[in-house]
Length: 376
Image (tube, rainbow, N blue to C red; front, side):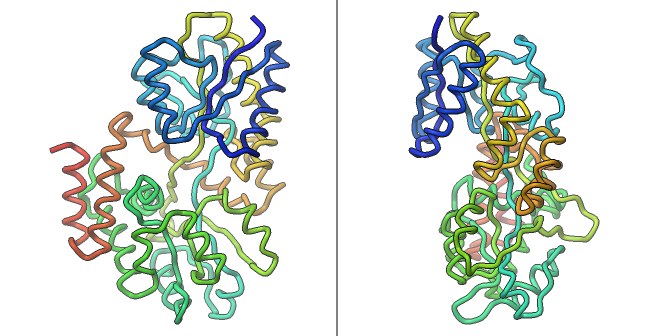
C-alpha cells in the first residue's frame, strides 16, 4: 500500500493547498502518500452517504462536527480507540462533538466559536464601556446608534447560521434545545427583539449572513457585532479600523457563558482494508498533535482543541484570547439531541424570524419552535 485517500470540503484554492501540504507531511510520517480531494460543503454529507452504501468511502474523512452523529449512526465510521489514538486533554465540548453513543469517532485539531467584536473608536467617542451584561449591551447599542449606523449587528437569517448566532444567548441564560418553550429561552429572544424594536439593530439582520454582518462592521455601519475568529485576518488588513473582541455578554453578571462549537472533525471510515484504516488513523493522530494544532490555529485564527495548547496560544495571539476562553465551556450543537439536532435548529431560526418580524411574541414563537423540534 503506497497511498490512502482523504476527503474534505476545503475547496478554496489556498486552503485546499495548505491542507494538502499538511496531509502530505502527516502521510510522509506514516509512510504513505495522501490523495487529497475536496468537494463543496453542501455536497459532502450526501456524497458520504452515497459512498457508504456503495462501500467506496475514503480512508480519511473530514466532517463538520454537527454532521458526525448522522454519519456515525449509519455505521460508516470506526471508533478511534481501536487505533490507540490519544483523545486526552481535549476540552469537554470538543470531545463530545466527536462522540457518538459513548465512543469517540472524530477529533478536531482546532475549533472556533463566536464572540463580540467592537469598534474601539466608536465606543470611546460615545463614552461607552464594553458591555458584559444584556442590560449593558442594550444601553451601549442604543448610545452607539445614530443615522447611518446601528449599535449592534447579528446574523438572524433563516438558516442554521442564524441559530448558531443565537445559541450563546439561549444557552448562557439556561435555555435548552430539549425544551425550547421556557422563560429562559423567551428572555434570550426578547433581547434580540428589544434591540431591533429600539432601532439599535437593523431589520436587515433577518437576511444577513455572518459575512454581511462583517461587511457592515468594517464599513462603520455597525459599532458591535457577533462573529467568529475567521474574520480576524480580514479585519487586520484594515489599518484604520481599531477593533477589540470580548466574550459575548450574559444576562446577569455571574452567569457562565456557553457558546456553540464550530470546527471540523477528522474520522476513519469503515473500509475493506484494515491496513489502510491503520495508516489513516496515524495521519489523523498527526493532524491532532500539539505542533499541528498550534500551526493550524495560527494559520486560520482558530483555537487548538487541547486545553493546554489553547492557553499557550492565547498568550501568543492576544486577539484570540476571548475565543480561547469561550471554547473551554463551549458546547457541541449535537451534545444534547444527537441526530435530532437539525430539527431543533430549524425550530430556533423559525422562532427568531417570527419574533423579530413581530408576527409572534417570543413565547408564541418558541412554543411553535418546540413543535417543530419534536415533530408534533
